[in-house]
Image (cartoon, rainbow, N blue to C red):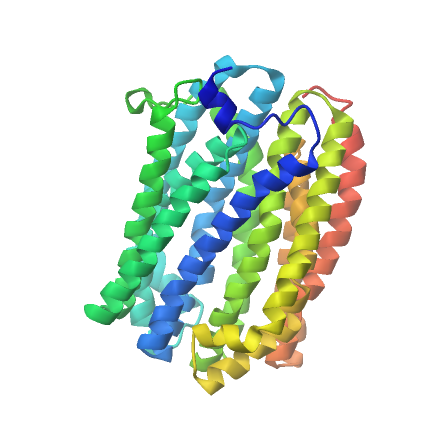
Length: 452
């Protein structure tokens, strides 16, 4: 094995697991949290240097972006599983074709979602009931954001390729550099050039170009099977089908999940601009908590995939246990710090008393118990690593999405308050966790009775 491979690849098949999982997940968690903080910088700059309407315009797009993006980003889970399984089986000669198939898929899906996003931006925002005073600005932000979708897809799929071999450090470096540039451009475009919503959208697109460019550079400079040659981009059918088989259920799950959040966002919109701004600001701390547990879910996917390819049942189960123990434990500590400092933290985004009042409601109901979400995310990651992507997708769709739609459609109208609406989050997390844990203990035994 070459020196370059030794420095960028983690041996997931041998030796103690705890330290390797932690060292793999830590840069991934840090990069995801940084990404969220850099996205939050859009809101902070707009909230502090413009007005609540501009802040609501940026924030009202979060669920729409998730709805259109998550289907295609979900396919990157399949990319991760495909290559990690090939590594576990020792079929490294298949990796070059897999790499070129995945990057080609990223470009194609990026162009598709860019077109859909630009065309559907205003109709979707109108359908969601975005207030008239923010819909023009929200549409403008959304259309500029979607112009950057090809590079966003390249970053996500390219990062999945690197993570499949245990390299979560270079995606972290790429995102960190791009994020710093994003913040600096936000300040320049909004404060100096007075571009407001246009400025934060342009800063996001340009910073994503930087992160995607670095990922492409790393892959092109690889000297082993992970080397990318842009002249050899192509799609190999069997690899594409494998990516779709694993990634499509994950993408559909995320899309339906985002659809349920669009419905919730529509209900939030009915409480007015200050509520939208408050929910948008406080939601950033939901995302920070999610980033932590999702990092260990990604670790569970990658480590389980390699060991499943090597047919090591006991090691796969140890991956799940260590990922759960560390992921949930660290997230609880993180949430405790967030709750203790919530009154100071929210003022990063806004000093408007009405907006802060609405934000505090979300802290007390949803954010304080957000670690529950991680229990089913990490378990779902382990199931995907076992090539059982449809199982966690169905459970999440029924336990989270269907439950939320029924709750918002039936219970909320009869007991209309913001507190009642936000209770949909912890209730759906508990339901989904019970179902996911049950499924894991049933499925993991069956998985090793069948060919990998």
